[in-house]
Amino acid sequence: MSTEYRGPTTSNDPTDDEPTIGRLIADTTRDVSLLVRNEIELAKSELKFSVKAGGMGAAFFGAAAFVGVLAIIMLSISLAYFLWWIGFHPALAFLTIFGLYLVIAGILAFVGLKKVKQVHAPEQTIAAVKSNKQVLKRG
Image (cartoon, rainbow, N blue to C red; front, side, top):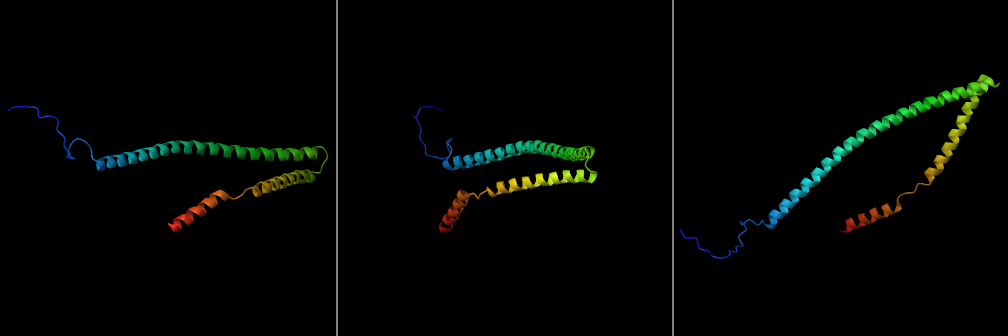
């Protein structure tokens, strides 16, 4: 058994250790798919935590709003009794507070209506969507 040196061997045989282009594309596709799946899982886990925290925050805001409404009711009754204490008839005192709230509601509705009228359609987006639609129809 002789072991003589025959020089470097070059072979175009795809069974060598070098991966083929098809193999590289398949590996890349698999890796990108795995990366996207992992990113989606990460986003899901982060969002699950964020949604839970956001839900708790919304619940506390709801509770705060409820207590705030109760406080406004108590303040309204107190103001009506104060008006009665300074000499108003009880019915007139409560109607005065009712009228005050109607004026406040009217002012808020007027300001809200002005703000809503300032809202405009997203014209650039609509134009871009129409343009994309025309391109897709042509092509």
